[in-house]
Length: 192
Length: 84
Image (tube, rainbow over all chains, first blue to last red; front, side, top):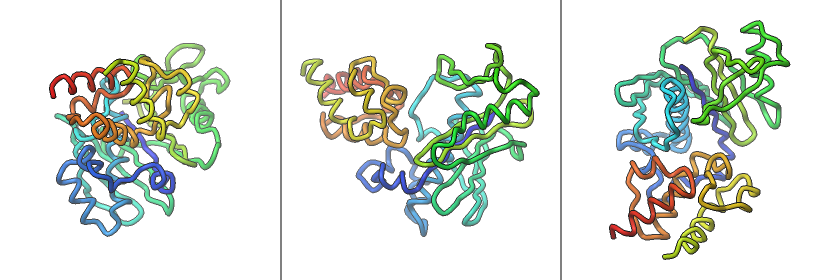
């Protein structure tokens, strides 16, 4: 399964005061906190680790059809490799491992998590109020050879989104994310 | 503390993080932080920290994981207050 998370740096700076007492401790392990605090750009590093956790949470929740939970601390992040624009990571939750790749731009970052390394996906990041759901539906319509007008996005009892065509569920691995002026999706090109 | 008082305090705490102000008009036990108020997930930690300060309680990780609605928060606050 896959998940994704987008962070708008300007919005994050307005919405969160990450330096407030307790903020880091509630979300990050001691090891992750030192990765943040010893970084040259602590705020960027923080949102990188946060997005890794969020993207993995979405993949993990979809994989096991779990009820929602705000349990960021259970997702243990390691940074494997990377540079200023792309970072590879590995996340452990319980006995499960996930792999992430994060693309870092000037004003946002976009993280994709997957159960498998080198998963083939299509992804898109859109600006402003462009309709990411319509873009996802368009991509699914091409991938699955289904009529676009009949595809819609629903949510299940755990609030996990799924796609239907003519009210029949489509077997499709995808994830949506919004933050600030950005929205994004990732769609798996292979069955999982 | 009465239920009404507790809910009033909780409403004041979440208000700065609410993205969908319409959700505040029908604020009650059934209000969901994510679905109804569209609170950004990173701000859930601020709600937890503000609740800790306001009620002078400590919210452990397990309790924090479950704090996704007004009812969840109310139950956790009452439990922690009773254990003080």
